[in-house]
Amino acid sequence: MSTEAVQEGVPDRIQSVIDDVGKVSETGEIPARIHNDREIFELERDRVFGGGWVFIGHESEIPEPGDYAKRYIADNPVIFVRDENHEIRVLFDACRHRGTTVVRAEQGNTTHFRCPYHNWTYKNTGKLVGVPHKEQCYKELDTCEYALQSPPQVDTYAGLVFACLSEDTPPLAEYLGDFKWYLDIAVDFAEGGLEVVGEPIRWEADTSWKIAADNFTGDAYHVPAAHKSTMDLDIFPSDLTALAGNRTSLDVIDCSGHSCSFSYFEESPGGYPEEIFTDEHLSQLQYKIAKNHVSIVGTVFPNLSFNNTLKNADPDNRELKKFLTIRKWQPVASDRTQIWNWILVPKNASEEFKKQAYDTGITTFSVSGNFEVDDFAVWDGITEAAGSSFARRTNRQSNYQMNMGEMGEAEDISDEWDGPGTVINSAFEDGTMRTFYQSWYQMMTGQRIDGSDTDSEQRGA
Image 1 (cartoon, rainbow, N blue to C red):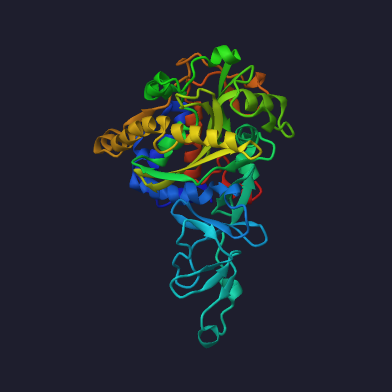
Image 2: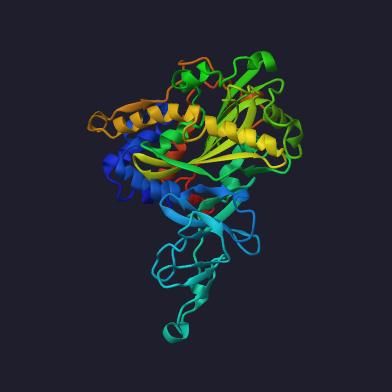
């Protein structure tokens, strides 16, 4: 779809806001109202979530044939299922008869899904196999044409399952692009892979999904203020530098439309069992970061974030543990987000380690975790102010100018770095967030997040 076609029918007052976001790389500012505007939110559901690759779940959540879970792509209910042939599928959760959802449980195991309204029945492949009184009422019905529908594209990367509602969007591997280099450090570093511990924990917050997603691109600037209590409690261990030597903190921006931030030492600070690491597909630098990092946090546009981090919130046992939390910022309304939180651990680690890592994850990054309550105490305030008449009347701007021009001292070290993307030698800069909003602008105007027009690609231009 061309940029012009996408913009057709959009009110000028909304289009001007979207266009202002598109200038973020030059101005370092975005209109505050994008964080709480109903019209913009409706466009997002169609354009961002209708055209991007959206995270569905981790394949370890449905290990056995017949395992399923109810999931969402924005406002679209889907069934995340492993069928009888062990194939992972994503099925639109709507009976092909009258359209009601066929799955009412959050998760389970079944060979068939039966609609509660008129009992049309589907195999867990989506095939329609049961129509009550078919010979009396539906003799000519071609059941092959009435299977449960699937998104045009479903794919997996390192155990992460994604779906895309647009057949015109590039394949997942191309969509992730060079960012796979950093994603591998966070989610594909362990021999045997990772697995989800427990169920995804969900809660809702009075905030825009974009505020949460931009924070997880790597907002280190908020840590000393918003998370001061966690620092006072020594959840950030104060002796790490002495333990592991010099610390390097870097931001990665403009990496195939995605961004991240990470910090690592010259020596390992521990956290993961030594024997779980793989170097089979990792470069020497990737392997070093995977073993020696304190954290690697990032966002795969639009709404999948990850944080592989080293923490300990147990005052009786100060041994540091690493775990991976992955987040889906599920949009509910312009001012409301449902957070889905998974905790993952190396599959080949001991059960004792998995329990300790899970407990650390729950007490730090979960609904009542030490870090979580700090963030949600301020994110709702951003959303409230963004939805105000004052913000609209004055076209109030939010500032993302840190380290632009002469603002800061951080430098682009991409030429000295062995990985992809633009790499900045500081975590105190806003480039990761400017990358997020540039991708938002591109998706909202019918472009791919690498900046190319989807129509041009289809024409072979």
